[in-house]
Length: 157
Image (cartoon, rainbow, N blue to C red; front, top):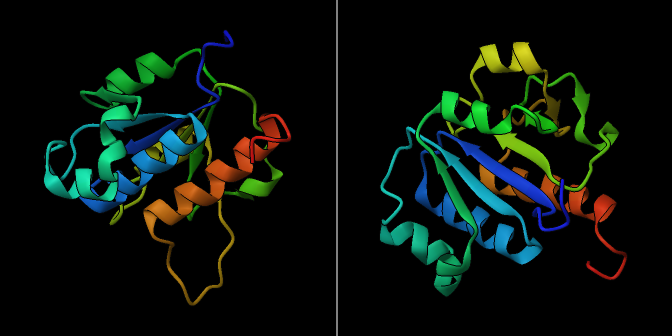
């Protein structure tokens, strides 16, 4: 990967809730990551809710849309990809992150398709059993900042 490569690629796989997508866009801009959205999605990318959550930053987000899962996986074929799921085997804190890594998060109501988790494996964010899952944008923030902390210069964060 070249140094022109963003430090991370954050992927929302079939997101359903515009404010989560807007929040993730703002996060990506804040850390210099590229944001990827894999269609189909549950809303229009032009909706005011996405822009509102991203505030006036939305136009600066390095947004890359993939028309479907097959198009995304073709793009990701030669990259280091980390999937995140409540069904993941080990904690995200046990992963090693590198510049240019791809972080993939599933949709709000279903997570990632089980066949992707079986095929590629997945990491999880440990949470107490009383909680089914974390909010998508919160989960993305937790993992993205952990990854950035391990790959960015010490004064970045």
